[in-house]
Length: 429
Image (cartoon, rainbow, N blue to C red; front, side):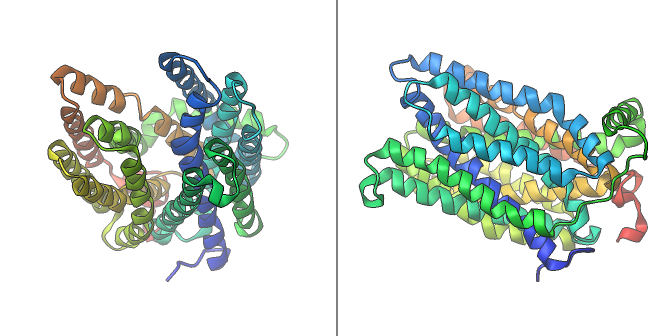
């Protein structure tokens, strides 16, 4: 049963969750799927692979820097103005338009492609800040775990459905009316933009806008700066939030490293590209029911227990990954990742929502998403250095156990009752 909203009913809950269905297509089709391939093989024809990789790294780094600089401030301003949906719309339109235009960039124009990729990714990440912040207004606090899980579940399903269609078109272009693989892949960007825009509409129609927290007669930008400055100079008051963010930084780094390095790891131990793409699709479609179930398990047994369970499974995945030999084992590991990846992400989001002051959800989810961008500083380098040091990529996967263990250990020190948000309010339970 889908939880009812405190103000908008089930329609508000489904409309909010459907945005995850909408924007996850960008993550699967563009970020993880076609852009890295086309950037090397279409927009940089004849360029050395090392140069191509460096340019792609610059684009990703610039995206991270932009979000790190603007996320907390824009969140604070949106809180003060009561304009979280407007901020989401602004970033969403940027992402949709840049993705659609990316499909029209001619071959060899790598700089234009990189610039549009940065704009599209900034739009996607920026919109996520305000999307996450709207969670606190669509349902009572006791249902946030289930609602967050519903969002991630629809995200896995929606992203997987569109990626499957685009992948089939790229592999069999003639059957879908395309002249070749490249044309089909570029059409995937257009399809992503349309998908994102269409399925985002219900959020803007049916999800309630939280009340503004700003004082009349003062500019919201100055109030946003003041709110952000106050938070940064009174960090002691937010100790449970800080402890959680440290824990989250550790273990989500491990989660993101598994996502980012899985294909490279699979290739290094001898599996083919088609097999690896199939494994990615397995993760997407297993992640749909798993994230949904995780939300209700978190609601019944607590988010912390659910996160601990997921981290334990990830530890087992790392150990099994070290010994994997057969293709069926790789697929089995993909199933396990699908079972816990969305669950750990969704329960982290809903637990964090219970810790923060609801009136400042935009600002605090700005910090949350900022940490999400920082959460690849340790894992991928650790993964690469350990494998290089031992001369065997299999040791790389074992190194991630350290991140999951550190995250679990720090999470134990999060005292929800001391948090300034809904978790510290007994009346909310």
